[in-house]
Length: 409
Image (cartoon, rainbow, N blue to C red; front, side, top):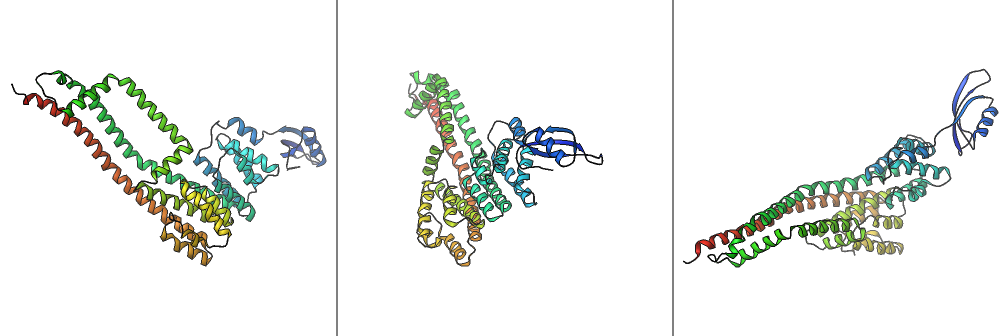
């Protein structure tokens, strides 16, 4: 039984008027108030102890690291399940905080529980918390609160986050074999260039051999690298560190993506990925009754390419002037012509969210096919380049060796 919705939670044992022992929990400002509440209810207190708060448990046991994407997705899914089963938010949050106490999400849930009990909305508590959820997720939560369908909004948010996680994981998995292939090729070339080529340096000093220019250049280069191996090793390590630092910087990563978008084959693939993501996020927001202007601005934040992201700000402005979405998108070069009919049909039928979801699926599948083609091209291209480099080195070595047999005595 609960005397109030704030204060410290106390676990109690007491005897009623008939001497039957009972137990439960109540909330009070302090222990004397808890005792007075039990006496007011006609109970004789036997034991009253303060129960540990969910926030304290989470703060003590939760690891000091940011919550991973799978952990955040699981949190949203579990909260949606509890709310969908009819459990109130005031009960669901402390229950999840206790079950996530040993995870990185435990402290965030405990903080959200305290904020909600203090009168804040869940969307505000999540926005100010440490979970760092995407903007569209926060918008979905806010829309779910406004419509009374918070469980559905949380479930849609988890589904979208899981879709983006799986797409990124698929790309990483697909790049493993080409990365291994290229790394093995680089190692093989390095071994030949550093360990084998310098052994023929004596030919350069031989008076009996007229070493060709190509052979001389390759042997001298291999000898130079071998003599300065430590400097080259440190340089390679520094280069890897700089690349890793650049990829961890959102600004530099964005510039790299912009440069890649200008490449012949990579550009169309990246654009289809962006359109698929945007259409899916926008459809999900609209399905949860987010106003279209706000939904377009939020869906733009999910994009990674600067061009489409900036352009969508002008799309929202034109919609405010009364233009149809399909007509506005028809003037944008980055938007696929095949998707205009889906958007136009969705606007005319009043089923724009479903048409956008279909467009997202179509563009995502097209992007997946382009990705497979690109990866199919990477493997033979890597083999050709590595083979050409090794062939060039071996040709130079063989030309140097054969130069001994062509000397005129």
